[in-house]
Amino acid sequence: MGGEDRVKFLEDPPRFLFFTGKGGVGKTSLACAAAIALADRGRRVLLVSTDPASNVGQVLGVEIGNRVIAIEAVAGLAAFEIDPEAAARAYRERIVGPVRGVLPDTTVKSIEEQLSGACTTEIAAFDEFTHLLADGAAARNFDHVVFDTAPTGHTIRLLQLPGAWSTFLETGNGDASCLGPLAGLDKQRERYRAAVATLADPDRTRLVLVARARNAALREVARTHEELAALGLTRQNLVINGVLPASEAEAHPLAAAIRTREEAALAALPEALAALPGDELPLKPFNLVGIERLRAFFADETSPVSAEAAMPYALDAPDLASLVDRIAADGRGLVMLMGKGGVGKTSLAAAIAVALAERGFAVHLSTSDPAAHLTETLDGSSAHLSVSRIDPAVETARYREHVLATKGAHLDAEGRALLEEDLRSPCTDETAVFQAFSRIIREADKRFVIMDTAPTGHTLLLLDATGAYHREVVRQMGDKGTHFTTPMMQLQDAKRTKVLVVTLAETTPVLEAARLQADLHRAGIEPWAWIVNQSLAAAAPRSALLRHRARAELGEIEAVAREHAVRYAVVPLLAEEPVGVVRLRALVEGAG
Image (cartoon, rainbow, N blue to C red; front, side, top):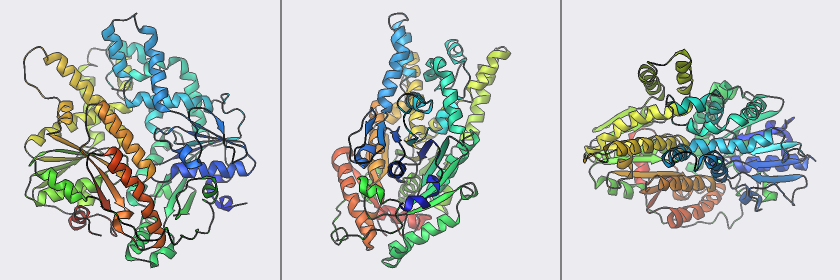
């Protein structure tokens, strides 16, 4: 037996294992390694990915796709990749197809618009894997089904809404932006209820929360834990992945600082996470690609780094200061930082805001991310800089009160109860936050407004709301000859708005950032630049293991420069957490 025997999340494994975590924490590699470990015990295992940025095939070294295939190198293992976009297209057609030619074209177009957002993709992906949870034919012959990417709390909250949506929406009483995609779910309601029950059954399902030993990442995973536990999904394990071995801390001050930082983060582990069964897995010098390396994932020993891998390398890439120079040249405008959680958007937003304020510009730094800690990051004040936070709870309460006082004023008791349930939809939160967001971005005509936005999925829901508002204003104002500017028009105007896509120099975060950029393109928004954050390659480490990891980043940075970004910058991983004005300044200047 291998080192996996000492891994808690593989002890007495239930039939379903779900791995969840932010991009770049090693979730896919961990899911693949776990599936191989179970198969090597003689179990029949199906590995399933529902991640739109899935690279399961790349990790296993096998082309998979939207069908179950046997992994020939591992007896008993098969894999299957659900394509969320393809699932969403099929789901849309299932709803829209029967009404084409029956309902007016304007009505059909309105339905298609309701089904064009991120909620539809989430629900369609869930629709696909509920077949597996419900012991569908694809999973019937397997002892374990391992999922790379669990359903989000957002998806589960949607599916727990009542079954009277369709009639309610048709009467125009509904108000949340994401209920449209739910209108076609009535036939599947019992299957979805059974799927959610399976997720909540500790005898059948285990959720594995994957994180890195970083304060921000651990706060995010604590939030995920609490949200899922509140929905009844209580059997959870925690894995802290990629912990730097103590032996590497002696090699260089950067390595020592990373080790110290990780130890401090683990010592301050949120109470809710500390109570979970947990594992710490060491950082490996090699990329976890290929069956043999995945089999070595749980080994206690750290494989030696080859002399060639530890050789010096050259990185010639623009720094953040070059982007800030170009932003400053405009004198004002909206700068939005977008990307998945855990990539360091908050620190970068604060660093850019401080750099502009120190040049004498009036700057308003704001966030709509409930996990952001701007005040903690700034750790002080800076002249010309004001800071605000859009509180989702406050904005949502205000929005619900307004809707109930207006749309709900003349409803009967049943209609008002349905409206209140509608307003408990998670997308109501996004609509409410968007209204506050719209108020702030108007300031960009007079000063710099730096928006540290929420993680990608939430941000795209904001953009869905923006687009709907934009279309309604255009419809009402288009024939009146009145000059107007909607928030969407401001976001689409490259002279007024600069969108900065933030990522890490790792495979999954770059794939996720590329997918975000494609979604923005569909919304008519052209990202102005990419920022590759927390780069080991830019930090020039001397530790052999870290240098090996740094060399692995070079291909991802080159892909950003050649394939994705109009312009870009690379920000080094700093020895100290970027907290306080001095260290934030170092992010811009590229100083270690």
